Image (tube, rainbow over all chains, first blue to last red; front, side):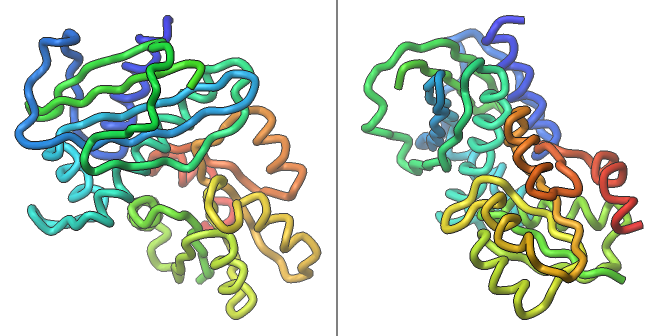
Length: 147
Length: 121
């Protein structure tokens, strides 16, 4: 199984087990446009292999995930809840992907950008990217090497 | 009835662990929470738990640092990790430090029952 397949399987597994939501794979560039902004979570993998895992999702997905994880009603999630929920989803992705990378030994704490922009990502090599739709909204997982 | 301490810097994950413990049939035990190893250590000094479910990577004090900090404590405890960290090196370090169980995230109710029945059942 190549990296893209592994990313797909792991992300769908996390979405199903933690959120109880389905993630449908979509072709890159053909996925839905987000209603509103984007939220980005990043986590660094370190060791003899170094890389970055980025979870980008529509604001609506972030709010939905947060409501599920915190057992909140619609519109009740505040920024600190969003930071926590998206951070934990990013942590789950990074941790499970780390096990697939030979030589990877460390995992940073996740960083969440509610405005969807991480200016510190400086175009390292894209090793794999999978685009999904969650309840009609975009979710993208990107694995970068050499970050 | 046992005292269970849940240690994780994510409040969302602490809620998920709580919910999973209830679904696994352990809801009648007393549950407490800490947001990192240092917070947990302070709570434990005031109210010693029977079982600890601890994340690995946390700010202030990691789960492994917490476990090592209590290694000379004579009071009995079942300390385990609930973590995304599942490399062989991590598992070896955890076991050598005295971890009683390691549960990989994401987990299921059945996994909780399998790993925790011996300590909570």
